[in-house]
Length: 248
Image 1 (spheres, helix red, strand yellow):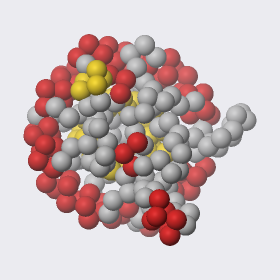
Image 2: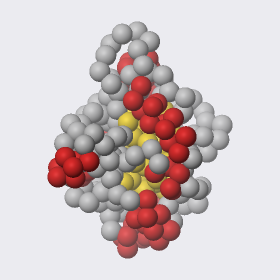
Image 3: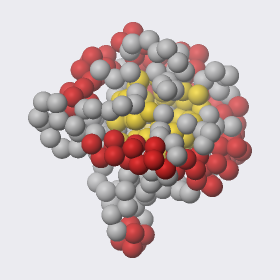
């Protein structure tokens, strides 16, 4: 299930949501990660969500919070999908708790049903042709499937250190190895994020072979404040370069 082709994430203002949709974005990301400069409280998110036209997917972005919190927020705001940015697996629960490392385990997808889930993942190191650089992500997907429900899409974002706080996990402006995305194996639709801008989006799509893109800092004049001209250029370039999608 491909939820979107072009997603503008980290929207904090009603006018930016309306413009992004009018320019052709078919998904808008609302950030609920505490400490992020793009984080919205529920009341503010309601106003932004209300400005998004019908037919445009409202995605809530979270990292390391409970399904109960996400479901409650989704109900209050009117979200259509959830995007998970926490670590795939807890390595040591005590250490993770002390460091505040956000983890979104595989059972989250089932706990969030019927909301579809977009799972943010990272390429693993390596440069061998045909190497499975989404191996850990695919194992998470299979574990989610076994637990009751897989995610709808994978979103390949820039790598961050494991100890990185939830607030600093997205909108970093770092780029992804586009060729590595093309060589990775995934059994779900893959969206590309990380360092995308109007001037590089066509090349990023051509090299990576992605079917969808997600942008935040690349179309901003300040964190959470979208630039109209950058959005216009980005969405136009992405729309020309992306393949059509059969099901939204």
